[in-house]
Image (tube, rainbow, N blue to C red; front, top):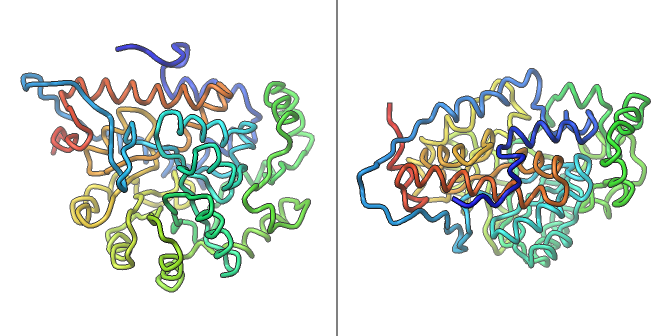
Length: 383
C-alpha cells in the first residue's frame, strides 16, 4: 500500500502531540478539551474502540473501495470534516485549509456558524460543495438572512444543531478568558510568545473573527460581552415550531446534528428531515451523557431505512471510521482529528490527515476482505 502522507506523523495521536507543541496553550485546550471533568470526551473514544470486527479471509476478494454515496452524491471516502468553532484561533486560516483539502479529496466539509471563514468564502473554495451548520438564531430575521446566504452560496446540505440548548461548561476556557480575539492576559501573551510560527501566521492572516456573523456583531466585544451577544443572539433549543419554517425555506437536504436518542431520531423523520448525525458534540456539552456509539446501533437498526444515519464524536482514526460504519452509520465526521492535523502541519495538515485516514481505512477493509463500505456491518462482531 502506497503511503501518501508525511511518514513522520503516521497517526492522529502523532498530530495531536505535534499540535500541542505548535499552538498556545489556551488554543490547544479549547481544541482538546471537553466539558466539566471530560468524562464523556474520553468515553466517546474508549467505548467506540470496544467495537470489534471480524475478518473473512477465505472469501473471494476483488479489492476495497472507499467510495460512498450520500444524498445522491458520490464521495471518495465515507468520512467528512465536522463543523468546529473558532478554527482560526487554533491555527490561522484553518477552515480555508480544510475546505481546500476536502474539495481536493472529494469529501464533505461542514462550516460552523461560529468559525472564522464566511459561508461565501467556504463555498468559493469548494465550488459550492461545502455544507453549512446553523446555530439557531433567536430572531427570525437573522435566521432567514443566514439561510438565504447559504442558499445563495449553493450549499447542498444545511445542518441544524440540536445539542446546544445551553453552552457547555468548560473550565479550561473560563480560566483562559477565551474570546474572539482571545483576551491577551500576561499569561496568554507569554503563551503566544512561545509559539512564534503561530504568532507569525496570525499576523499574516489577521486576528480571527466570526466571519459569517461579522455583519451582525458589534465591534470589540470582550469575553463578557461576547458571551452576552451569543446568549442573546442564539437559542440552540430546537422544536417543531423552529424546525418547520427552516424545512419550508430550505430546498436542499437538511440534517439534524446532535441526536442522542431514538425519540429525537423519530421526530426528525416526522418533521421531514433528510438525515441525522448521532453525536454528543464531541463530549463538549453533557459530561454525564452516553457515548455516541451507544445509541447509534439501535437508531440505525430502527430508522436507517427511513433517514440517513451518520455519526461523529469520538471518531479519531480509520479503524474508528470502520467501527462506526460497521455499527450502522452510513457516514462519519471528525473535528479534532483534522484540527490536530492543521495545527501540527499548517497548510499541509488537511491533505495529510485525509490521506492518513484514507490509508488507515483502506487497510482495515482489505484486512477484513470487505469490498464495499456498505458491507462493513457484515463484519461486526456481535457479543
